[in-house]
Image 1: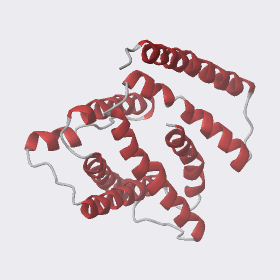
Image 2 (image 1 turned 45 degrees about the vertical axis):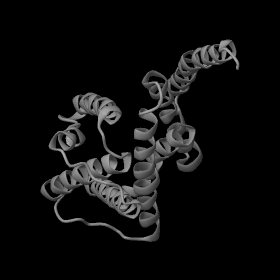
Image 3 (image 1 turned 30 degrees about the horizontal axis):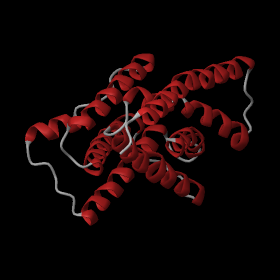
Image 4 (image 1 turned 180 degrees about the vertical axis):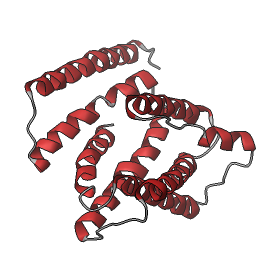
Length: 218
């Protein structure tokens, strides 16, 4: 969870860098499509069987965010939650689930990019290529598979608690890489997030440790 949340947090910095060379929707579309294609190739190399029943595919492609602004944020959060819950019950390999969702989502984003932003005007320099590869392979493909894998074996309340670290890593990296300054309220918010996470995670670890110590030994 540490490397996963660090990767997600670093995506904020990577997106800021990537937007210097590409429009927003095209960057998002390329990120999703490259991640989906990479996972599809891995699925092929692993010879992972694809789901054959229609119900499984409906479940896989169901989650989606709607609206704009704050409503989009809320609906996207709901979609992520639904997708996580579905990943626990759907009978499909995490690589297949992630590849399908990213390819479908990337295709929709590409259509939106054509309609809203027109033909892509992208500066394909080394900086942009490396940034795009990081966003696609590390910040999207690897983390999506890891999230679906953990969601199948971990408690969701503890799992989602770890995601509180994402903005913390994002802020820390923005200070170190982009040289941005944090306001007083930003530091207060950071402290609140860290304390909240400790209050949620530490008691669970103590409870699990206590339960393990009290378990009968052979």
